[in-house]
Length: 411
Image (cartoon, rainbow, N blue to C red; front, side, top):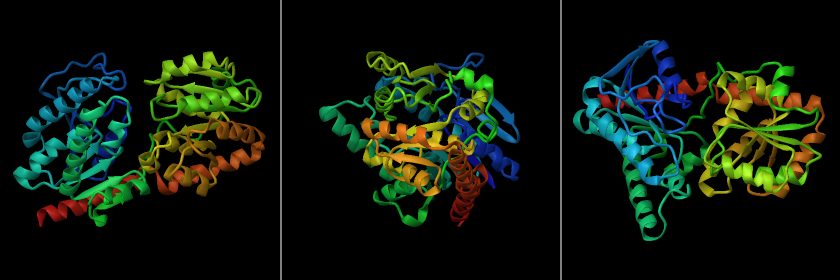
């Protein structure tokens, strides 16, 4: 097939799913053409060594990549975020008719939904079918982010985004979602159930894999010979980082809690740990991706958290796949699909979200689990990843969706 891939986020950014999908589809013999912008995540600034310009083309492992300019932003300003999304919608729509000429089907990575603009134009001009890969539900992820306006303006934005998403969903030949509950929520919005498929995200398998723990990695995370729980990834507004800090502060003799990463909530998290005098909470900041597998192996558990919001019950955060792929036991403070996966797979311990007392009890219970049982949890998690979430499994399913979309388009 001739496949067009549209995504505002693309390697070398950490949003690796579109890049790995493109490379694997090309390896399987497909002609893959990517339309994206210049890398700026997570700081909202174009990467050093890159210069935004109109005619930027490159070939990478059989994939042709066209980058178009866009306004970079990834801060708390809703207006600047909107400018970023809309600018990529505009420039990608201008470039799409020529760069994606002759493709049989399109894959669009969402969010943001404005990435669909170019696909919508090609559908109108040439009837090209699209498979939409939904990572977050809109408008919920916007209206609960803290960046959306309140009052009348907020309600108007909610109505606008709801109507826009319904039209986008209805126009797609296929929709991939990252969790079963998300599939149900999309169907509730009027989408044909036959067009929706759950495709769990994979992780970067070159980086996240089982490795032995090393003394150097244990020193790097400050392991003191007692149960160490690591939270690795985005310290954002939906992860409930404050809940984890309060829980750790309540049981200072049970566990050490180590944060690896940064995000919009990082400074608030540091302030809270200081206010609570939580000496068993440490912040390491961002670390190179190549170091993460060894850091995972140095910790005793990986902590995965989500706020108690109805729409988040249909979310499987990417840090879960990373932990499972590394064969590390998981502590899960969440509800919905992610919690059910860990519980049913015997890959770790689960407690309700947004409840620091319950999480504190879980920290104590985790510290009492024998090492041999932790090893078994990690092995079960690794098998769960291989069977249901791996790159091979995910690309198989998206390739099938694209093939069916292309057949329906030609028909």
